[in-house]
Image (cartoon, rainbow, N blue to C red; front, top):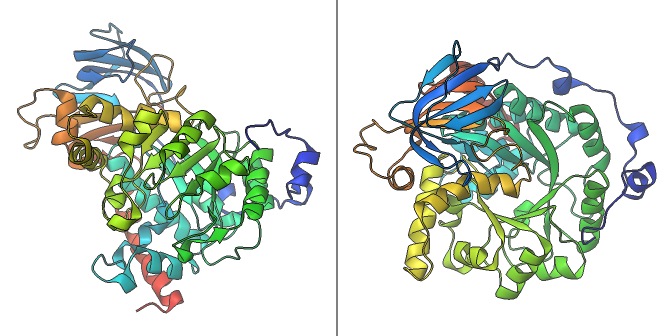
Length: 474
């Protein structure tokens, strides 16, 4: 299905195994009223160091950003707007928020159980064992916990890679967490941990979720996360035949939904290409073992790749190397992701530092990587990857106001020289002062404006304890 257009008709849905007429009515999390979020209004972000990530707009050592009803109206050295609320951004970097393109938010509850120094209590054994016991409420609380950390670290968009959707109600819960948090996000609807590998995914449930949640105000979108295709070195995460993948991917395409898949272990790219499955609606994750021929195929088909440097840099040498330089050279769309926050913290500044260090280690000055290029990788390139660059990823008039303010007066950021250099070399999540998503200020002065911090922590701890009890995990 090399980007052949799939008609969104009853016949196409039926051929994909989807029966919309038999879908259940809206229930559970999707039926709950949305949590109160800060209103969108009109304001001018005044006097910040503006890094727009838009070559036509440019950067300003001191500039203003005008926001109205969730949209960026203007970006300039000085904006006169009488009677409009002003947000003081002096001594702060004003930039697009980070766009995360692959994050297993449902595993956030497992951080109290996972051990980095005990293979039996590592990420995969723990999440595979406990994932089978998740209730929709556990999914909601886990995703909300991860999103709270993401907001505090400067994320304004996340790709919620939900490979433990045990029922459509679990998907409702994860979407509700995205909605209640106010963040921009895509839910990648997946299959349950421990589920059968010889059966297609729940396409009817996927169609029900699409019908009930889309369209919305534009902040939430939907896709699928596919199980690995072909031979797999990680049996804990599911592995399906190319025939099953055809059914899953065909069902997603019949609904007009994008597809994402891990490529840990032996590369499946040639297999997918021979099956005619690759296209610009496909995102692959973990670029570690691709060949030059495969990268040429990816570029030609418009496939994107998400790299998770914090986790990938901890893998054994036999798992491959992070091929950022090779992807850039081949012209493959590339972006940054956290992967999970059950084994380490959410830190996009660290992701950029790791990529810079590894690139320098591997290539020296032969393939130079600038600080500005890394910041673009974490912002605009993520929006390109998720096909939402017309809405976010840069401070461009007409786009939605997804931006962050980073303090430059903190001890680790002073004295400031080049702001891009400071972001990549010195910045930490604690320097993020303000986070705005779709014109709503969700973090100000390092504090949440809508989320109840104490409630998020209390409910996460309650669910983690109950989950361990149900799984008989000691």
